[in-house]
Length: 78
Image (tube, rainbow, N blue to C red; front, side):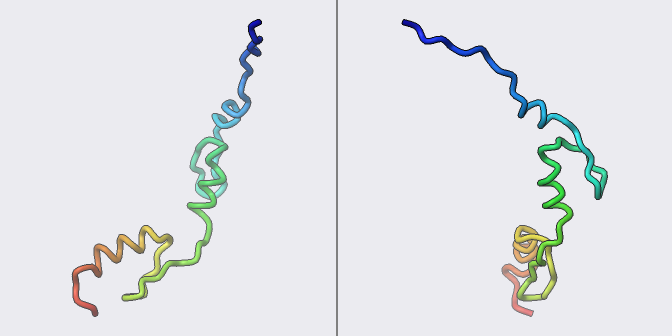
Protein backbone atom coordinates (compact mmCIF):
# COMPACT_ATOMS: atom_id res chain seq x y z
CA UNK A 1 0.00 0.00 0.00
CA UNK A 2 1.16 3.47 -0.81
CA UNK A 3 0.90 6.24 1.71
CA UNK A 4 -1.09 9.23 0.64
CA UNK A 5 0.96 12.38 0.43
CA UNK A 6 -0.97 15.46 1.53
CA UNK A 7 -1.26 18.26 -1.01
CA UNK A 8 1.19 21.15 -0.60
CA UNK A 9 -0.01 23.97 1.59
CA UNK A 10 0.61 27.66 1.12
CA UNK A 11 2.98 28.97 3.71
CA UNK A 12 1.62 32.02 5.47
CA UNK A 13 5.05 32.68 6.97
CA UNK A 14 6.55 33.54 3.58
CA UNK A 15 3.67 35.84 2.76
CA UNK A 16 3.96 37.67 6.09
CA UNK A 17 7.74 38.02 5.95
CA UNK A 18 7.62 39.63 2.50
CA UNK A 19 5.35 42.46 3.68
CA UNK A 20 7.23 45.76 3.83
CA UNK A 21 7.12 48.06 6.85
CA UNK A 22 8.67 51.39 7.76
CA UNK A 23 10.73 52.08 10.87
CA UNK A 24 8.99 54.65 13.07
CA UNK A 25 12.31 56.19 14.07
CA UNK A 26 14.40 56.50 10.89
CA UNK A 27 11.84 55.70 8.15
CA UNK A 28 13.93 52.84 6.77
CA UNK A 29 11.82 50.36 4.81
CA UNK A 30 12.30 46.64 5.35
CA UNK A 31 10.38 43.41 5.74
CA UNK A 32 8.13 43.21 8.76
CA UNK A 33 10.10 40.23 10.03
CA UNK A 34 13.28 42.36 10.18
CA UNK A 35 11.70 45.48 11.67
CA UNK A 36 11.88 44.45 15.34
CA UNK A 37 15.52 43.37 15.02
CA UNK A 38 16.36 46.65 13.24
CA UNK A 39 14.75 48.82 15.92
CA UNK A 40 16.37 46.84 18.72
CA UNK A 41 19.88 46.91 17.25
CA UNK A 42 19.90 50.34 15.62
CA UNK A 43 17.81 52.47 17.95
CA UNK A 44 18.09 51.00 21.44
CA UNK A 45 20.32 52.60 24.03
CA UNK A 46 22.82 49.87 24.89
CA UNK A 47 25.23 50.31 27.74
CA UNK A 48 28.34 51.90 26.26
CA UNK A 49 31.48 49.82 26.00
CA UNK A 50 34.45 51.86 27.23
CA UNK A 51 38.07 51.54 26.28
CA UNK A 52 40.11 50.88 29.42
CA UNK A 53 43.08 52.77 27.98
CA UNK A 54 41.55 56.06 26.77
CA UNK A 55 37.94 55.92 28.11
CA UNK A 56 36.41 56.42 24.66
CA UNK A 57 32.89 54.90 24.52
CA UNK A 58 31.47 52.63 21.79
CA UNK A 59 28.02 51.22 20.99
CA UNK A 60 29.16 47.61 20.73
CA UNK A 61 32.02 45.23 21.42
CA UNK A 62 32.99 45.03 17.76
CA UNK A 63 33.59 48.79 17.52
CA UNK A 64 35.56 48.76 20.76
CA UNK A 65 37.67 45.84 19.55
CA UNK A 66 38.39 47.60 16.23
CA UNK A 67 39.29 50.83 18.06
CA UNK A 68 41.67 48.93 20.33
CA UNK A 69 43.27 47.08 17.43
CA UNK A 70 43.72 50.22 15.30
CA UNK A 71 44.67 52.62 18.09
CA UNK A 72 46.38 50.80 20.93
CA UNK A 73 47.89 47.53 19.65
CA UNK A 74 51.65 47.50 19.16
CA UNK A 75 51.96 50.99 20.61
CA UNK A 76 53.44 52.01 23.93
CA UNK A 77 50.96 52.72 26.73
CA UNK A 78 49.99 56.36 27.11
